[in-house]
Length: 309
Image 1 (tube, rainbow, N blue to C red):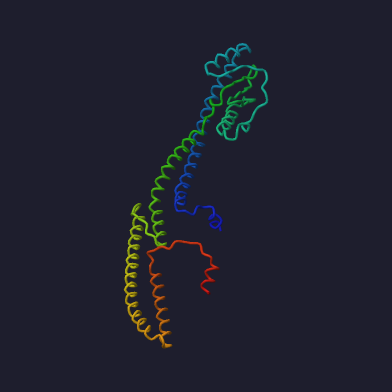
Image 2: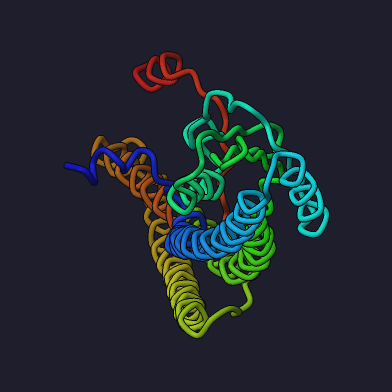
């Protein structure tokens, strides 16, 4: 049932069927392996990068909480922010928190990074995502510690690079494979053209080439064509001899009967001789298979009327 439904969709030519047999499994394997590798690799890298940042955030929060007042906490936070290349400040309140689902659906590593931050930083009251950046608000002794940094610091970015590389390599190798497959299919196409032309009475030049199996088929075709041509030649020679042998006695019979025109039996025999000569002419015309008749448009009505008359 499924085969009958898919049959009209699949190509009918051997070239494209062979291409499907080669490229569909290879493409499927490449996509599955690439996606599986990207998911595992970038998930692991994102977890490691997020864990490293969690240590930095805990250190900054601990230094801020250890300060005796807000001013000292702000100076400590500012000093550590420069050392760790991020923006940090002490604020009174935290805005509403964003969620990992707020990221684009294709940013899988970013979603994972936000979830890892929420798990590794229980002090985190809020998180905001904006233009590739992240801002955290951690509850501390002197207020909320605000940390702003790029998302690329905790998330492996550009996971599409491997897909692009795989696609480019796949396209290049696909073009090479298509060229090689086309070269392998060309001898088979020439063999099919030569066989079809010979079936219509034409003899096209054909040279054995291609793979071993194609060469064997081509050699068998050439031998078969040579045997058929020899058979046709022998038949033509035989029919020519038969024609010569039959026309000689028929000519003698016609000459003998022409002397007996007054006899009723002679006229009937002359009609039989003429019919036999017409049969021989039609038989010889049928035997001349070397000449290919050209196709011409014919009015069947006029042809039937002419034959009936």
